[in-house]
Image (cartoon, rainbow, N blue to C red; front, side, top):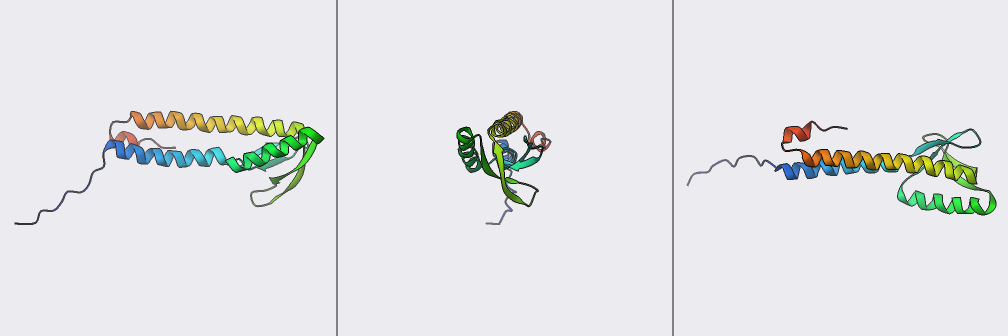
Length: 131
């Protein structure tokens, strides 16, 4: 017996695609959950948190605004400063529509990208896919 050097492991295209899909999924989540800056009826643009747990809080506040016509809601004033503002019921619809449309864009981006990733046949084709 002599020792032979083992050749380096070469992942399959399926393994490479799965890794690329994981990267794309992380980017998708970042895009879906990003803070959205929306101008409301007071003329200011505020940042709204858009992760799943934030949507629950937003919907609860919207319901309160439906009852009273307005309610307080915590928003971003700058990228580092957050505080409470009073939003009108119509502001919640404006923000909801903006966030929903932008999140649908993120879903469409991911679906198109994942289809391109799955259609690749070589590592070179896969490496050429960027975002």
